[in-house]
Amino acid sequence: MARRDREAFLNKAASDAEEAASKGKMGDVFLAIRTVSGKTTSAVTAPIVKLDGSACSTTDEVLDRWREHYESALNHPAGSVCHELNDYAAAAQEDANVCTDEPTL
Figure 1 (cartoon, one colour):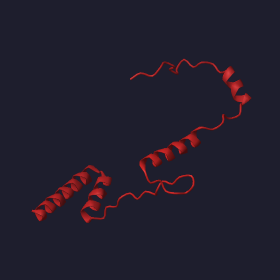
Figure 2 (figure 1 turned 90 degrees about the horizontal axis):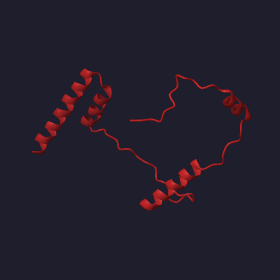
Figure 3 (figure 1 turned 30 degrees about the vertical axis):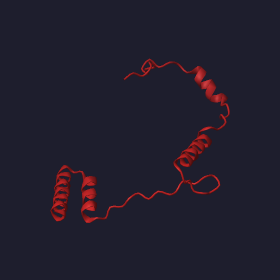
Figure 4 (figure 1 turned 135 degrees about the horizontal axis):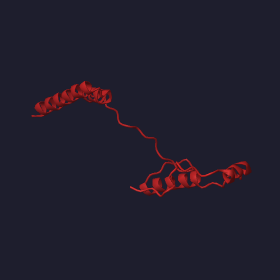
């Protein structure tokens, strides 16, 4: 039964590859080739480390580390005031072709 199931799986993968090739979907073709050849690779991810360099061992530690990362990346002091841009903004005229209504679905 296992041999029959494997043969059915490979035949389906081959027919899917042929169909994708006829439609010009080369990404699907290469995926099927990798599946049939058995050379699929899993994504290897680097461990998430704390600020002190030690690896996070629990889900809560990983979540805390991501929280720290985004707080440090997104929370920064405001930029300096550019008087030239403020002057341009004050002198700008409203364009009738630009819609300023609130977005809707």
